Image (cartoon, rainbow, N blue to C red; front, side, top):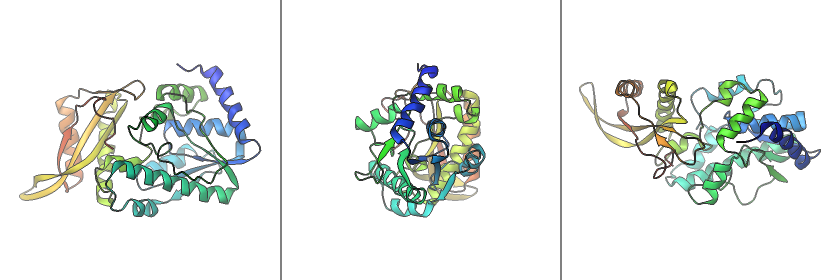
Length: 305
């Protein structure tokens, strides 16, 4: 486990040394990794840091409003509406790795534009150790590691929590006094709901996934999962009222883990699962059925793509 008393001052000093007198932008997502990176970088360089939240259209329900509320103390916070650009870039793409790489490149291009506006030479991001392991090991590219384009218009990319596991990042968040909502928030993938939609990413599938994920997180909060999610995995025949529908299949997943490198599917009681399926199918006429994923990691990964 990380020694926060040692890590925090060393990380702040390292950020200051890397960036020097320059300006920087930080990729802010609202998750604990980027929030900790932002807090450390803000301590190191103050107002020379510009936090940038890119609303990709792939985010959780209510995410943008939550960002505004959580980070309103940073006067330089910028919120960028980039939904149309991301969905246009993803149109017609079905391969998971290609989706991740497209999202990684789109993120960088958004931050490059913001860096030009703020005269920033450095990008700070919340890459953690499992991101690097999975990308470098060929399991799947993370948008902030293997998904980065080869040419990046920054003098450097600063990753203050790159050697920490998720539970260690949470320890640092508590040490820094970050809000519990941030410190204890379950992981959410950098590419967002794009990796919870099998095949092409469309507005319709995103809305199904967004609402279903909201239901799952709400219903399973008492189980204290490492991660709980829902994914749109295909279509199947169903019945709504007296009508046959060929609607979406939503898979629900909830796992326990220490660091995300391995995970075990949680045992969820039948009443809770039935309540989840009722809320998901009731909220969207185009959902035909809901299934529960009982697969551990390995052989599966936690996310679907």
